[in-house]
Image: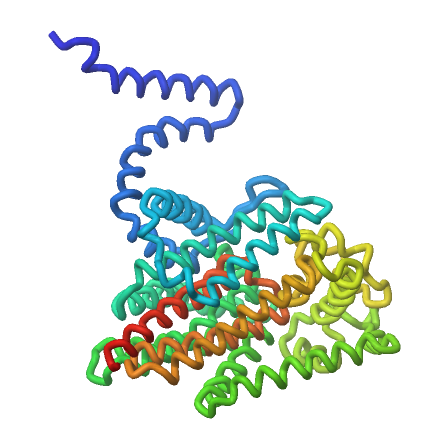
Length: 481
């Protein structure tokens, strides 16, 4: 006769299920019934996470294009399922580094770019402490951690080969171009209407700006893959088809910013070949400072105040582009409205800023009514539409200097590695990173998507790859010496 002990697991499972059933009925919440199944699966899931951690990383990379925004409460949302995976990987990595400190990549400890990241994190935490709502800033700090660990630190361990980098590119490109293909198919039923783009990419992207930003930043990856693939390789024709598909999808995404980013990326290729990057950065900084000084002198910025009644949203792409040129497009007019507010916020708190994640709750009192548009009520709770200005008003001049130092340092490092590598594969990957970063720079000048999973993951992956390639370059130099 079997003892009662042999029935213990079944007995516990039955009790847990019955208790959950009672709670679900009492609370009138059917989601409570998920708990017993989660309880049963937890040991298997935990064992898989511990023994197959690398697979979680690849799953994260593949799910980035597919992830969608999930609103948990009115004030709390996350990108699902990639953000929970980032948290899981970050938590496991932290435990690993605490348990085995030697497993932390040693070369990161002396890497200047990684030091800038640490300084940025420290300053954002300090800036949050000066905020009227510090908890918003601390949430920003935590979210930044679970981006940096999976996309900057873990690649030093998991992508330590050409095969790993190539695999990552495939895991990004195949899902993204599948989504682009289905978007084009769905778009045909709407006659490729400008107004209906958003429907074709739902629920994976909030709008056509997010979609086109990720799409354009992945085109250099496809191009480099095509360059590195031998002509006799049977997969080369599929890579070329993917490149053509990407261009077509980008055209019908109807995003002016992404189109401009593509042109900048093409121009950046020739700039890198001529080794003119430092000159270009100096010219761009000088130009931006000159324009800013002119705008604030004698209130010259008021010349760009829109005509409220004539500044509207156009559903026709031709009218949309024409309105852009004449500054009568509502999206650009609203952008000016928030830029003015952002600069006024910087003037109010130039050193520490208002704290990360604080723009929306603070900017209304710093706006200028002359720039107001019919969408200024901002139901989407979006921010200033310029990541550089967002950093300036939320984290002050110190925060902006640190971010610009990181971004420019990444560009310089990429160019340096491209010219330094004897290995063609790593050299082309370095070039690809610079092209992607140049496109990201254009996109974030007109948006603030570094904190989103789609573009933010690409930005931090670029940094992780640069740190990895820098170490590879040192190893190559040691072998050649």
